[in-house]
Length: 339
Image 1 (cartoon, rainbow, N blue to C red):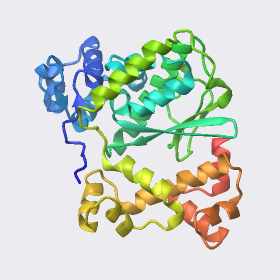
Image 2 (image 1 turned 60 degrees about the vertical axis):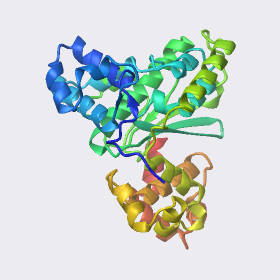
Image 3 (image 1 turned 180 degrees about the vertical axis):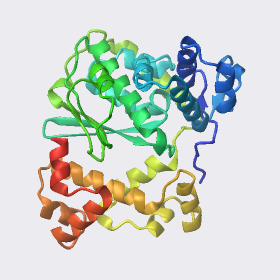
């Protein structure tokens, strides 16, 4: 079984990369030097269906951020990202009936709408959490990408709902030095040091009708997007697939050997797949365990003993020790950070 890496040409150049390219032109950056650095050709943006790699797109963003030397580049790009002009998937998003359908479309067509990060959703106890994960192994760009994607969803919701929705934002990093742009584009309800990049909103806002909704247009666009997808290779790496596998099997003592067997390859080959994305099995397992623990704390309101039992630890002491190794924080301190 073959899995895509960040060097595989699986993204349409005229979609997200074109948006970045047009912003670079607007800021009068040296387009030829940007193209050289990201190993792009100017004609890549002129030809329909020309494919580039996630690595090339990431390098383009990285070079733009470096040359602009500004704290608002990620936010400015995010403002124009969604619904976007990415074919029928964007049309479906434009005519979504409410926030619930918009998020479902975002997940269903993430290759077209947000190809660099993987969105995940959980809803329970009157809250919905939308969290973002690195897909291609770009930790140095993760903060930039999270800001861009959170801004994109926030701006899209504000435009399509014609109101500012009460999102709460959690970041897997320390408090930003330049917080002003976060306030301008996201709002004041920010949480840092959460070990999760997430947006949280009360469930009561999910089914409020949006003024631009058009059920027949949305259904037609979704049908067209599905038909279009069936003709192309899905641009997804092994990382989100492994995350889903581990999440489903977290209570069954998942191991490297079992995971390799699930993905139909040898242990050595499986390790190489992960290494190409700058990660390894234990790191991915620890991340899933941490996310599951946070979910159980936040949504299920479980205590340490209950979470330890759920995750297969013999006692709460061992769980707390492991949790601090995963995150650098105790469960109680991280719970407070997200409240």
